[in-house]
Image (cartoon, rainbow, N blue to C red; front, top):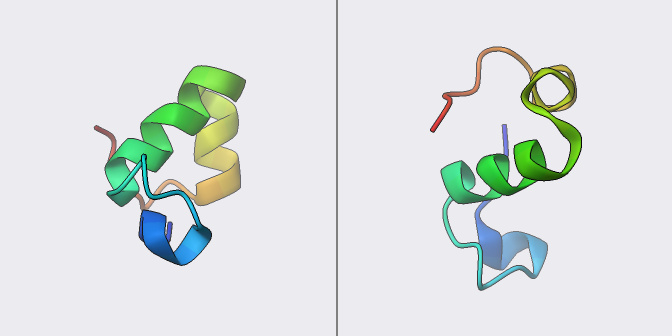
Length: 43
C-alpha cells in the first residue's frame, strides 16, 4: 500500500495512484509491482 503524498512529504504527487505512476516511470512497472505488491491498482 502506498501512503498519501502528504504522509510521505510529497505534496506535488498527491494520490497513491500518482505516486505509483511516478515510481513506475523511474524504475519500470515490473519493479514497481515487486516493490509495492501486485495487489495495488495500476493507473
